[in-house]
Image (cartoon, rainbow, N blue to C red; front, side, top):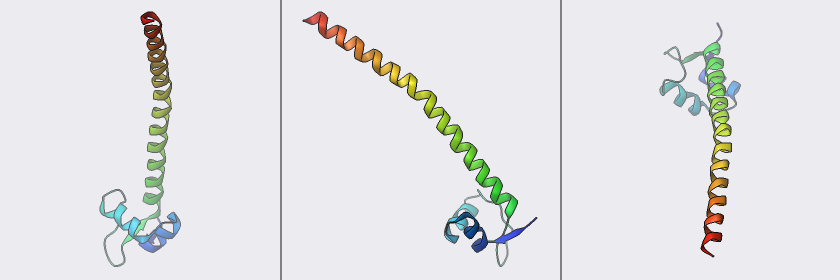
Length: 88
């Protein structure tokens, strides 16, 4: 178990200390209270992995929805053209 300060965690994540603090205070990143506040490196890496998994899940859901939306749009376009031709 390797404990990191906020500054070390920020450096590892390539973000600001304020970002680490926001993650910590929002409950997304477990920490050991005190002076200095300590963050377990394993918890930090677990948070990153969870965020990656969530992003991948959202991305795959969007890709699955797009063909259905495209098909729906195409069908509507075809039906609208047919309706216009019948009117003329």
